[in-house]
Image (cartoon, rainbow, N blue to C red; front, side):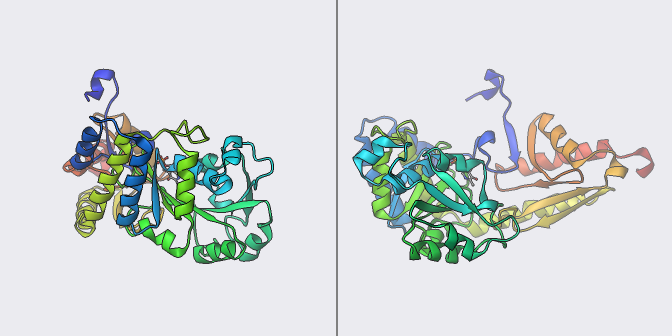
Length: 376
Ligand SMILES: *Cc1c(COP(=O)(O)O)cnc(C)c1O
């Protein structure tokens, strides 16, 4: 696609697998699988079951379901936990009259994506604070209206939380299912089975982030009975999930992506990223008023190195936020991660081969152009 013909400028992405930047770039294997899938009619519910079975085997899970994204996965998982396969309850959603209607979660975990959980009509019951949450608060929050407990893994989860294993244990002791949003928790690849092996009932992942699947795809992994309930609550059935239709191309595409991701040499990939970060830092550290260093792990605790670039704002006369904006406005448009007035991050893991050099050249040129004459 020639995006420029539409008047939309492509972006070199040294930021992250952001939905608003197009997620990730599918490898040729995934594109080929989708193209092949696009040529034939197929019974879609049978395909969903067959693909789910393969993905479950590959990811060491009991069962799997392909959704249109992790957020859609949260809607379906919540619906499946609340309504199960009961036709009356399924039809009634998001009206929760007579059904369990409370979801307990850490206050610190509240984030924009939990709108997906709330869209099933539930009330979020928050426990704890950003600093600390006590296991007793979870015990006290669970009652006979509690449909499930919900955990978001990411930059918002932290050392003040109830340890995840204990969170699961307390919920299960009361017969309450656990849903985990791990949408962006790849790498490491082992996370595809880590949370379910800890005992989580359902876990969602985005297919359009580091899995490099179709941007509009996601995975729900976990308990067989609940995955079956996801299917009943999802398209093509007339249920809450019907607007989140999954196409045959997404189903086959994400299966190809899972295979591709499991077969990746993750160590070689990490070594490559380390090398780019090292090159960035070495070059940037030549400039007066600029200090660059490897930062690891990333903000969400994932094993991905980044370059943290710190600016002497007085000396350079430009802030980190201004550098971020000027790179984005430049030609080509380059997205890097903002980090307030004095620093920014360069993230290697969404870059295409060769792009790390373009990012470096443009950042160097920008920082050289703002150097005060007296410092040269
Ligand atoms: C990206 C993300 C989502 C949404 O994933 P989609 O696949 O884009 O629907 C949900 N939760 C978290 C924590 C995320 O980072």
